[in-house]
Length: 122
Image (cartoon, rainbow, N blue to C red; front, side):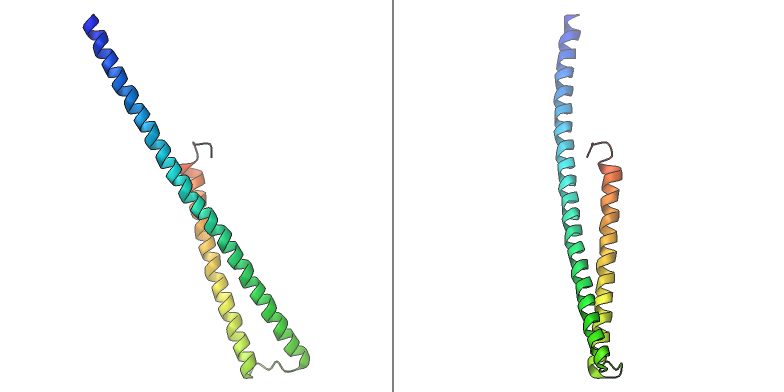
C-alpha cells in the first residue's frame, strides 16, 4: 500500500501546484479586467466633463442670442445670426456624439459589473 500513498502524494502536490497556478492566473485576469474597468470609469468621468463643457457653450451662446434679440439685432438672415445658429447646431451635434459615447461606455461598464465581477464581490 505504500506505493499507492507515494503516488497519491505526488498527484496531490502536482494538483496543489496547478491550483495555485490557476488561482494566480485568475487573479491576474481579474486585475487586468479591473484595470480595463478603471479605464472605462476614467473615460466616463472625462465624457461627463465634456458634456458639461458643451452645455456651458450652449448656455453662453443662447445668452448671446438673447442679447441680440433684445437689441433687436438678431435677424435669422444676418451673417452673425447664421453663424450663431450654425455654431449651436455644431455644439448640439457634438453633444449628441459625446452622449452616445457615454451610453456605450455605460453599457460596457454594466456588462463588466453584471458578468465579469458578478461573483468576484466587486
